Image (cartoon, rainbow, N blue to C red; front, side):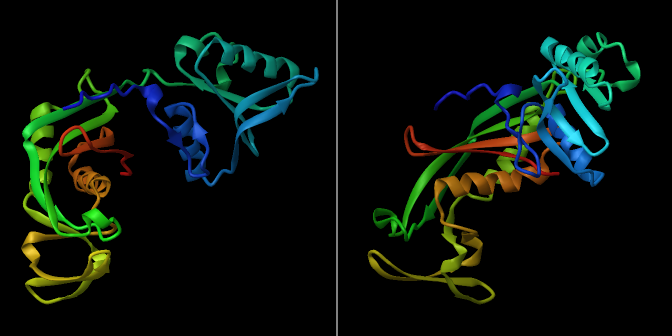
Length: 271
């Protein structure tokens, strides 16, 4: 099996509802708060100073500017705005390590602790399943065939006391979800011709001719999309999401389809 890649806070991509790619979790939180308050904003606003130079401010709203203080350069930028544009209303948000260096305490919002993002990964022989599927859009895979696949799961989120999730708890959840996939026939729901109380009839006209099969419902798994290993990864994430603790913010699922090949899907969780 391939080893799990390390996932750092800097590896995350924080995207607001407008599609802006944020640099930090703090910026994303601010954008979410502004959206909740129905306060329109412009991200990475270019502010022209009185001396003719310009700076990029994190947020511009109708009521003022917001700058996230993450480093010494942000402090310099903040001070430059205060000196050159005293009429601009600006608030600084950041860690006391940096914001304590700013004199205007009434303009500051502190957060007491730097968020610590952590990740764990789990591989176990019990995270494997046998299944059959058909991919009508791929000629060589458009006939009924099967695989034995194994799964590795990454969990990413905010740690408490240097712990993300207890391995025993995570293993139990993952094992329960993977078990739902074992010895199932996976197929895109759009190929469902008809059904009764106990069976599905699957039918499509593919590269190898007309396919028509009746399968028991308790051995079939209908997917919203083709039964690719990528889609199976996404489906496992959907099943895992409601079972995981609230501090888990993203899940990555590797499914190996045979030796040294497979799929990896990572997704942020929406609570």
